[in-house]
Length: 248
Image 1 (cartoon, one colour):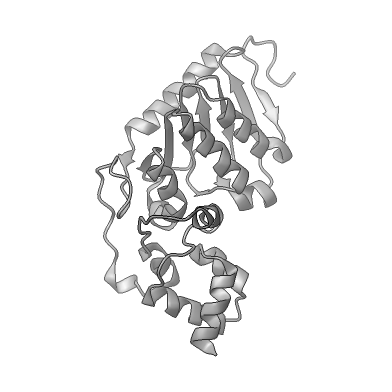
Image 2 (cartoon, helix red, strand yellow):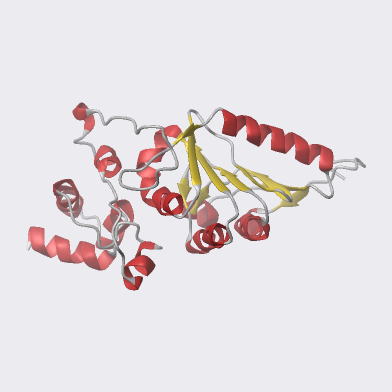
């Protein structure tokens, strides 16, 4: 065997089973859940799994790469508002997912594109099978958490005290800066709005001048409504209406 006859026996997870393994880890967490991932854009089933733990009042911590927080905010804030703790860490590259029962060490970020398209691999480490190795994993995750900073969101969760990094005025004309600059307002939502925001985080939000300018620019570059919707976190139908309004 690759790992010899050691009493510590991690399980290899092939690329087509990693997303399921991570979702199972989340669903089985009874006391704590910590997800360390530089990039975060969760697919629908993963969102549901995390929300199930939050509804069960299981402490959930999300640790994200610091320079990704702004652009990831549309996906992070809903979880923060539901009680998740969101932290950031500079130069984060590790992908570590852990409950009190098991851990998954993998090359896969919690990105829908990674789960669907990338070649990844992973190891599962269970506390019951490999207590020594599991404890080393726990120590590493604790170290990452201790070096991380709390994150707050405009008009959202007040659990964190770390202020957001200021926007650089000279770079606001760039697409990425425009996306990062968009805020999400906390509103009273109807059921259909809540459902829409599970897959389109900015559904039903008021339009900003910057968003409208970005829609017009991307449309001129021949990007279709589905592509623009993914960038802005809005529904394709809303993008189509806005394109007709702006471009005729």
